Length: 388
Image 1 (cartoon, rainbow, N blue to C red):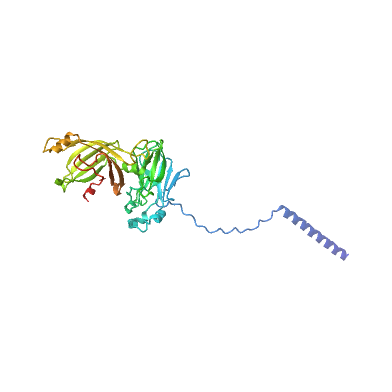
Image 2: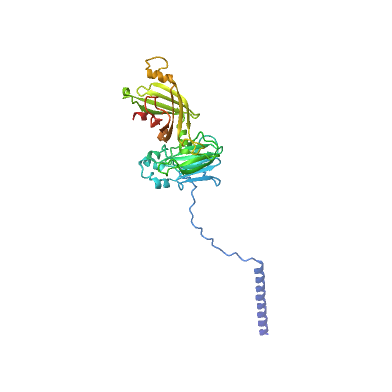
């Protein structure tokens, strides 16, 4: 009986254990497992980027994808044209590599840290810019690099209306605490221009000087060195000195003044060197041969011709003694004319000179039967040049 009781007890214990296991399995099926604990990765240390700031002299809004970009000498100068407006930029490192001007020339030592590269806008007469060309043309020495004997950067702009504008940009531009732009001016006489080209100047003495040619719809080519040079001396007083060769005036001479107007008229007057008293005034017309090629027997590009007549002289009032020669001179109705080759140079602070070489006809600086034709003559915008 005792054994039977033990057996019953063991059976009940086994049943209880089985029941507990079944219940535990049911609970595990209904209760979701606890999520595994995961350790998030350690973030890599990063340095926050500073907000982008423009390089000194660089526009905060550089040229967009639709901009027309014209590069000169592998990026020494770059012109951007966007929405009809132009801007000019420089690469100082390339300028220094080519000319050694920024770190070796005393002209820049005092403000080397203030030099700017741009782009700088080109401001000038109204109109939309269509195309551009850059050149360092002979005869232009007006900017800071011009003082070192390096030619100016001339930016030639072809406008949508077929006219041409020109600006002189300075790679030595520096920050003066104000907005910087380059002023362009309209080059008169040029109309219906369809293209610009960068080529060797046909009048280059050594065959390697470069210039820009503006080509019109007829195919005529205009050297911008010549047209641009003349455009800068329009309506300005140009002075030259003529030494008298008459034995009675060994130590005297004439001061000659020439004024060319855009409309093709000219004024030429003579004054005694000492006292600046004018004694003759001539009025008339001039004509510049600008086209490189023309039909017929034309003058070479850059030639200028004059057709002037005497409009006043000091003795016409009847005062003073008039010699027989002077009386004959007046009665004949003195005229001046002739054709000259020209070479124009632009200097710092807007000064300029025009060098005339006599070709044919009566010289601009002579009296009839009084002195031989002049082979050359140089006029200056700066009158003080006559006294050096």
